[in-house]
Amino acid sequence: MIQRLLTCLILLFSVFKITAANNKNLPFYNQVAPCNTTGQWWDTHGIWNLIQSETEITGFDWDQQTTPCSGRYPLTGTITDKKLAFRTINPNPSQTCADWFNYEGTLSNDCTIISGTWINSNGKHGKFRLIQDGIPILQIINPSKHNTAFLIDTNESMPTIPLFVQIKQKTPDPTPYTEFKWINDIQHNVTSNQIYSANWEQTTVGKNYLPDFTTYLTDGLRGGEFKLTAETNIENHHISDQIKLKILGTNPGKDRIDTQFSKQSNMLPLFVFQGIACQESRYRQFAANREEGNGTPIAGKKINRLRAIGIMQLYKPAPSNNAIWGWKENLNEGINILSQKALESKKAHLTERQRLNKKRMAASLSECTQGTPPPLTKAQLIRESIRRYNGGREYQWEPWDTPDCKDGRWIIDPIRYSDELYVDNVLNCQLDIHDQWNKTSN
Image (tube, rainbow, N blue to C red; front, side, top):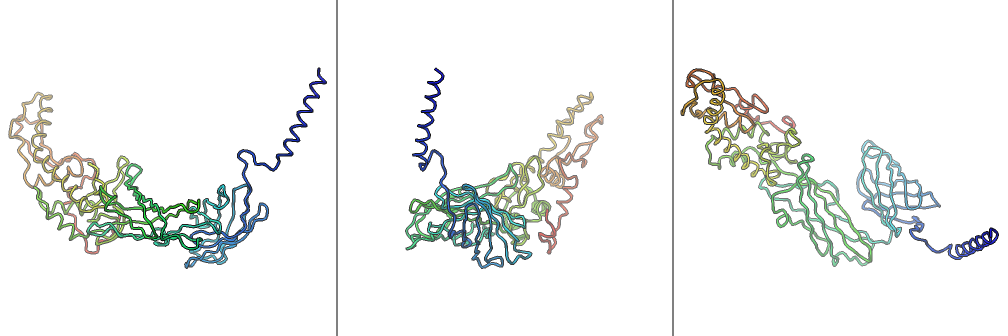
């Protein structure tokens, strides 16, 4: 019995060997075909020439941009399966140009694209993408540089941003009749809880593209990082390119802000609004020079994971989307808040009477009758409104425990949630003619 079993096992093993030998050249499930990277590769900066010998790679990166750091960078590295690691050396290093770049990447399944990450000797890092010579490449050729800045003007008009793309390594050039999808992503992070973004897609034919802010920014201006991705399909290849730009705001300057203030009809004098704009932001919507400087919205200190925004430092209620990048809306919402605080201040004597009577009843004292305390005077109303804009209240009726409630008087004894001197600072705030961002940064 044992001998028969052994004979069967030997026969099965022999069949397995024969079958394996006959199929040794057939791919099995998930088998990865080896790639030979020898040849020319392209990225948006220039040509890469790679020479592969088994698991070793040599060659050079020829950066053809017209920058001080352009040139031919020798490279060495290794390849294991489809994982690559190599380093390029700058033959002419300087203070501004890195000594070396380290790359780690992965080959695509068809061995035509190498993509991954890089880091250099200066600590900078990013992503890279190499495409094999002969494979179509899509490149955004204008704007040509990442982080190019475009400006929202003082009239609150979004910038005009013309973009051009081109399909390379394909003759004749199919760009003029190719359909492209453009993915638009604008994002500005104030805190992890204050992220203001806009996203949309547009489709065009040909090289020209102009982001349509009028149609897609329906709830207000937007700025910050503007990431654009162009993509299309050609000859069974999905090709794309991406560029990151900046959209910055422009400070309107003191005269435009004062003109906007003067258009408002409210119960507080103009100098109150001017004093708050002065104290809160030095008349700046953006973190830049007051007179038409360019930057991102000025943000105050973090309170409960949020920051106040803009000229009027809007916090509670939170600013609308359009008040982040729109200075006029920031003013309007600040004016509305301050006007509401003025209405509350006109009724301060009524709420104060309720507070007093609660304490007096507990102390077995007679209640304050109607007319006591009296309404705040005009000057007191101004101070109370300013205090409430910042948080808290300015006046109390003291002493509260006299036999006759009428024997008290209004005193400044602020219940506050922030700056004790806030009201005085607002009323005494002055702008220096040379008061620029580098002297007043928060």
